[in-house]
Length: 255
Length: 338
Image (cartoon, rainbow over all chains, first blue to last red; front, side, top):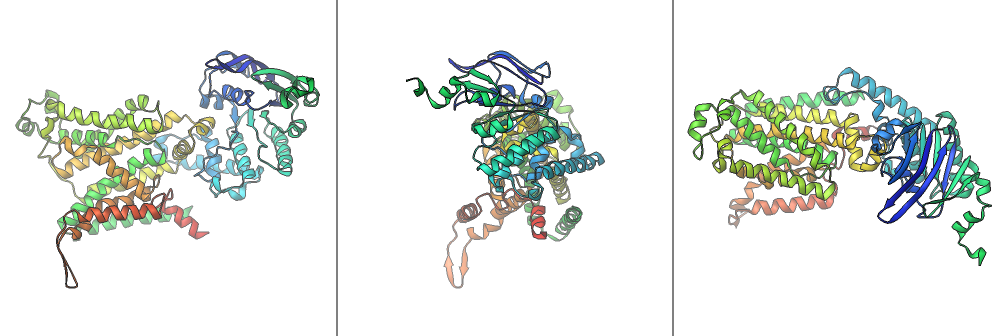
């Protein structure tokens, strides 16, 4: 068990964006979080990554309580994320974007960088080498010197995932990775995620609307509606579940 | 990579050579302009670190420059001269004891500014964007009001004069060069990368494990250190300081310099300094009477500022991100080699 949420509630004033959310992710599992817009999926992400502190409830990562920890500390524990609307560092090169992911792994002090001591050169060389390996893996090495904002949408997605992997996570949170992609790109991305999961030895929690993508990838899904859990189980069962269909398509079936 | 290194060494020697040439062959007037430019390069590049590279719109440099100037001045003026100078109130005993030579005085100016920046970081970086600008603007005002209202320390509105001056272009130019080199070393390290990341997207940066508060504080303290040193040099250069010098206009001038040169580019900050500080002087011709091929134009004092403003507008229209954008000189070389 890598991540465990125990009746987590996040309230903004009177609105409960997520209500008594409980689920757990096993090692090397791809877990899907689905539900209509405004169901609280991204809020769940923000609660896990420390951007919000939940109103009540417990979150345990590798059996350690992470509630109330700052976002950058949670990353160091091993949870990395991507964003729904791609958020790369636009003015920086692709290589620099990936190197930001390595930031905590690069060990030299402020003074060492000012004085350009040997450790600076060693660490920079080592991390650039590692960054290039990751870029090669994701097929974006040729864009190394390009500005991040100049890349195509699909490649920007890859840079964002590569950047998250560079932080050396044990759990990767992907917020709608296939949004805005055509079927061919979606298929390629699904394969890439599956491969990366095995090669980098990580668990994945993802939000997605594309049910085909979810079906193909996820071992388990949880369906949220208005902050409440309405289904948890296999993706193939989810699309047969009456309540899930109602939430997604409206309840005209019962009329 | 090595090409960049050769370029760097070449630039260093070229700068030293030019400073030596200027010091030995130029008249006093030109030397004073060049020294002012060198001091403003220190101020502009260090301000650029927090404002351009880290993207924190802060408006406090006049505060740090004032602190640096006063610390250096107080450390350099002898105790007897101080007793003569303080007319409003007797100087505090610790003011009388304080006395060092130039280099430790400049260093202490930087350190004290830096410590203040550290203390200031806690309240200041709780807010972002426009609000940060307002909070830091307040700090600049506080320092100036403090300088006016503590005559036992600063000699109040009269200010300090007869600051022993021993600086020439070697001092100002040398320190400016070291400042620029340190700034570049910071920018091309993991800390500079993190600063740029904070500028581009602060939330994404913290989602990548960067302690954004720490990075902003590093940037702020470094910036304050060199603003303090620059302020100290300014005091020694002017030989007389009063609270009036350190109004918001000083900050405003620095903003013009770095925006004109390109926010986030050190090369741009240097070019901007030459244009704004040098340009203001070199355009003086326009204030005088002109005989243009028999056409006689009367003197219009202030004409140069009109022309100067037009030039500023023109530059900003044609180069929206400033002259250099976010690029450095070395980036231009990289591109042309491809």
